[in-house]
Image (cartoon, rainbow, N blue to C red):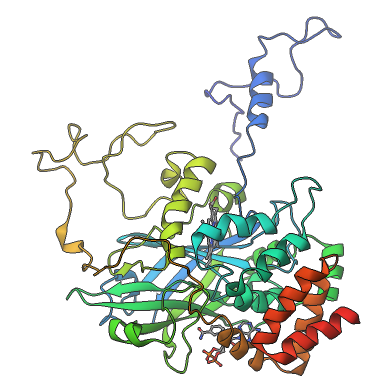
Length: 479
Ligand code: NDP
Ligand code: HEM
């Protein structure tokens, strides 16, 4: 067995890692014991800021295999038939802090990073196809209602229902959250959704709109509130145990990958705004097309380095995949990289877990902790344009087709003429009697301590989805 010598961070051997240097056997410490100071100083810097949302998470590596053929819609190499791409997934709850219990009712994050040969493609979705708000102007307000009250330092059902009852566009997501699927038993037992409308474009410069879906092959499984309370009493780490344990045991979770496609012509006549994140595209009108399989088959060697330091961003797209006018997506294109620069530092993309596998060539320069040097292809190429043949150059063949945009710049009321009720109604009508009863009682549980005028305002919204919905919750509140 090879014996490794313990060293300082500067590489010098350490002779004693047990006893500090003191002046005399019982005397005070000497400041020259630099290794003692180094250990304490490093410890003080072990924590980085937790994610402002989605702080508690569980992740693993795997592969995406493309078995379907959507090559007529997209030139993206990662989506071509037969392609296999290494990937990373991180699942999370939204509201809880880093030490929160796993089995809590909340939306789950479903963040994916595909290390494609054309750069990293990140799909940063949830286990729900829609979201609580449709204008990013309201995202920080919404998140405040999910986090702690400034004075009590407790989470506040009053704040949540006050906001939701004043935001009818939240009804669809609130209904999913309070349904069985709002509390999955483990990450393997839930679907994932890219949620937003993205675009696909091909070499002819044609664009279609697309939604991505990841359907669990393990089957849906949920806890009731009562079951979850018991589970949390036994262990706060059930998702980590389940996902990590399953992969260690060689049971690799899989998801069927599907897309829905909408042409630009269909978008113009769709009954809803196709870029509204509070809406789905009905499967009957926009069928699910099988695209491939995602499998998770490798645990991280170091949770902090590979899962905590993972930086997912909807801004990471690759040629053949593009954004859409979805306002929420547009804001997220800014927000995530900004969060990473704060949470991880300027060169977060150079961390091994975030590093593209195809190599990068860019002209950004210097900055804290820059250990990469300049990788533009030539030592003199630190500006662009330049006349150095070996230096990295733009590649016009990757140009995305132009997107026509028109209209007056204004603050348009996103609630005007928007139907917030028919899709929650379609969902409500999918539930069987047992699911409806659990929906009512989950909502009643979640309304504990909320002032009556807020409850009444929310009940009036449920009534507009379906009279049975409002009345069911009314009854559960009394019971
Ligand atoms: P479909 O009957 O074709 O599809 C119903 C969808 O609902 C399925 O994807 C199913 O997921 C999902 N579902 C079932 N139970 C729940 C639940 N408790 N919470 C969330 N999703 C659930 O209907 P439509 O496409 O016409 O949509 C009807 C409603 O279904 C929508 O208003 C929406 O609320 C919901 N839905 C629709 C999706 C879409 O992309 N069209 C996606 C997810 C939900 P699974 O296939 O895994 O069983
Ligand atoms: C995490 C912002 C909406 C899914 C985050 C983070 C920020 C953020 C700042 C922390 C990032 C980090 O520190 O690494 C926003 C903003 C939104 C928005 C501004 C709306 C305007 C959404 C939506 C979804 C979503 C609609 C899903 C469809 C996620 C996920 C994570 C996350 C999955 C965790 C990623 C990970 O595992 O590292 N969000 N978010 N967010 N968000 Fe959002």
